[in-house]
Length: 540
Length: 91
Image 1 (cartoon, rainbow over the protein chains, first blue to last red):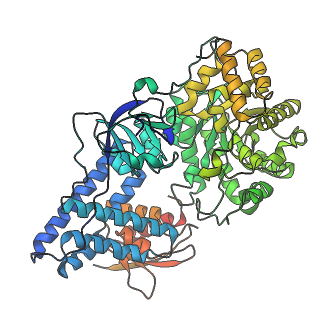
Image 2 (image 1 turned 45 degrees about the vertical axis):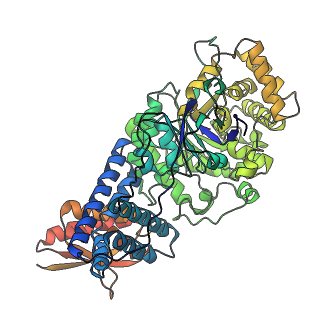
Image 3 (image 1 turned 60 degrees about the vertical axis):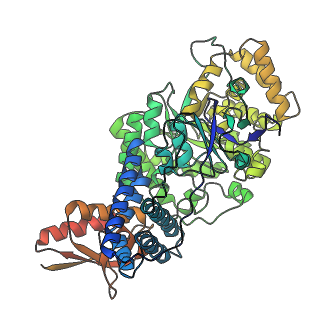
């Protein structure tokens, strides 16, 4: 077998690291069994195990700041009714490990029929299995080798598993996983180099040495540090970035982190966090309190809040929104505004209350606007409810072509290249198969962006970019060259994008943008920009 | 001990899902209240059990009976008020 087998996936983090593989395989639970007869003892064992697992959950949640998920699990685990039901099972002759599993299953069965509750049921079954493992001494913490650097390889990891990993785990490789999951967030926060969605990871064997190379989105079997893909580095030529670089945030916690960074304000607040994780329709006052905390924590500069942006009903069950195809979504535009205008009003009212309390300038924008009439509707609504800068996300091709009609109406637009490229290429960015074909470097897409930047300038509307493309440092230079006035990126991308934007001058950025559209393919565009940056001595 | 009854209405569009259930349980435990909740005509469930509360599958618009075990009418009123606020989705 080739010593340098390369397994691809999706990397999280900027550092590459080498270590010994350790495969984590969930130990099978034995079949349910009857006890040896001492029911009092079984109950004692059961209560101890429940208490121990609850303490573990509590410690796990303290490590990463208050973690609602783990606290909710703890509450279910300590539910007196769960124990009461398990006690009945012990009285019926089952041993402690079986009793807790039977009890959990009976509640999970009650939750059937409701998608959301069914998930809680699964969580409960998982917890009961943890308790059963504790009772049966199937150590939930496997015997990790203690004296070497370990690369943990498994199918997936849950947040509570991550919170308990020993210090000599230096990297993680997951066969599954998603880069926006709670687990991914935790792994990034812990600074653990990670590669997820690496299906071939299953082929790795215990003890073998691998290089986990997140920047290269790969795991190299037998690889060493020299094979690590280098993160780009730029030469600083100017004290300030060519155009302001702001932060994209989706929680008060992220606002705090951004506040401690070099971000020039916040270019995107994804306000869904008030509704998604909480699964409750918060009243105006509760929303206002959260917005107030966010505005107080956010870095100096503009703060652009995007009103609630949800697609299907999986995300926010209480807004009954049937799923749509790509084309339908682009055509219908901002459905929440047409179906639930009072919901958007409440949100804007809450933002205004917070704005007054904090006393800083606030901008609001609506997502998924597909025509000037919808834009006008949103602007009228917003201007009537507060003293804001008002704009829209520019993410449907239809509105992108009608910017002149927005003159005099909007203060700004923010280009959402994720959805815009999605619609433009008419491919599903959520499907792993087609997602790779969407490439914002494609010259025809870059030409569309150029059109947008020019039309916005002519209409006197300030235009920025807040999609993932802005977090690509070389593309960020191109965007500045096309005429966009600001970029907004995730906090983890801030320093690399700022660094890129302090290297090139405006003239250089403009000529790089022209180069990017002078070729025929996305790959060629990226290559020619990179080589020119290198030639100019701006990038190594 | 006396049993005080009150009627609560689930107004939150999300219904009685895990977050409001969790808030109710936390309040009941923090205050040390003995209470039960449920639908009229059915067996009431302990208000300190997140699992039983969720199993009610109470939806927006449903009415629930609250039974508080106390001699203190004022306390009972406060508890009913607080739980109603939770079920309004305002907490």
